[in-house]
Amino acid sequence: MRLPISLFTLTAAGTTAFVPLPASRSTALSAAVNGESAKGSTAEVTTKNDSSSTKKFHYEYIARKARPHFDILSRTVTDKDVPLIYLDSGATSQKPGAVLEKLDDYYKRVNSNVHRGAHTLSREATSAYEEARDKVSSFINAHSRNEIVFTSGATEAINLVAQSYGRTNLKAGDEVVLTVAEHHANLVPWQMLSQEIDGGLTIKYVRIDPETGCLDLKHMESLLTEKTKIVGFQHVSNVLGCINPVKDMVSMVRDKSPNAKIILDACQSVPHMPVDVQELDVDFLAASGHKMCGPTGIGFLWGREDLLNSMPPWKGGGEMIDQVTLEGSTYLPSPSRFEAGTPAIAQAVGLAAAIDYLTSFGMKEIEAYEHELAEYLYDQMKQVPGLTILGPPNGKQRVALCAFTHESIHPSDLSTFLDMEGVAVRAGHHCCQPLHQELGFSHSARASLYLYNTKE
Ligand code: PMP
Image (cartoon, rainbow, N blue to C red):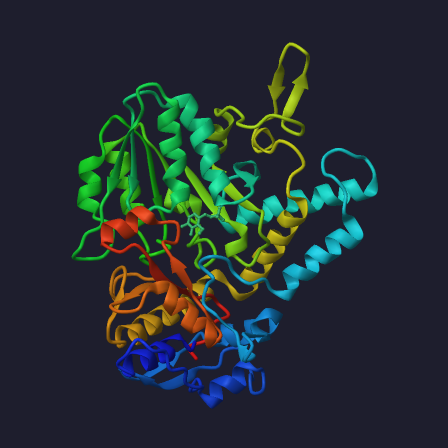
């Protein structure tokens, strides 16, 4: 991970001019990353260049094992052919060979439409697609495969809830509690729904506690009433990097707002840690496949089966019907009722391969490694003069994601300068404009890591 070193160089120069330095790679690590000395899978790596003298990276074997599976990570960028350091996994993750091969194999050998044909290819495509549903179901410990609705991503999953559950069950004056930290995907659908309802909804936003840098849960408690019908929040913030205490938040909602349904945006948690819907006890959960080593164009909504079956379809067409006459139609139960038209079959198959890939490391192990990375990233960035890191400090639960601003360099310039060194970080509002406004910034730069990033 060259980012901190580059930034340090940048600020140590005492000017806004960017001074690229060769990355000071640890030879042992570098060799290990390149597979030269990766003996055994549980090697412990000791490094000596952080502030707290010596730090052990128990789980770095994960990155060493993973990196060779991602061809893209060995490419070079810019006209100087510098090695790529990909620190933008919060936006989308890279895809391992196992996923790419599965997609290739699907299109070369199986490609057909699902649920519609008795021929071999159609049967095979249907099994592969439905097996993908089983994979997702057990990955998040759903009660039943019928609780998994494939969508194009988390955005579509949340829109489904707003347009189906929301339109049917919310009326003027009902309250929706969201947080200022929400991604636009969990803000705009509710604002759109409010506009559609004559008289509108009352949308309230949980603020950030300036002391902790996390959601202000006392404020949340004060917003919840018996009129609250929807509570929506992220599991992990894509800007603040904090892990929200979902279970505490859920019990607060159940206590104060028994009529509310809870929707969890799990985009930034499902790829990085074990997520168990039964344990979290929310009502809906949304996630995107492309952030968890899967292809773009696939994600899923989880909801309890009885709840999903109580909701009307939000898109009509083939695949979702029971009977159609010229007078009207009846619909299949979940998940089919929400999957009108030809689904993203290959993408679902690719997502299943991604889940196999992640589980081959173990989600607990990935979480443990990323926890080490998170601490290291924060500690290193904290040492850079002039940087403000958004979100809570180490000690609070953080993921390996840091959004930051610099006192004299615009985030877009930072991102461009870093790109010249091969370091891919994101600059912008990260689809969280209200959060940035709340924090007093228009934009930030963001480094977001995944299992294939090393400390280096
Ligand atoms: N929520 C969060 C927290 C996200 O990070 C993202 C993606 N940036 C989304 C929702 C939307 O995901 P998608 O664009 O894949 O639908």
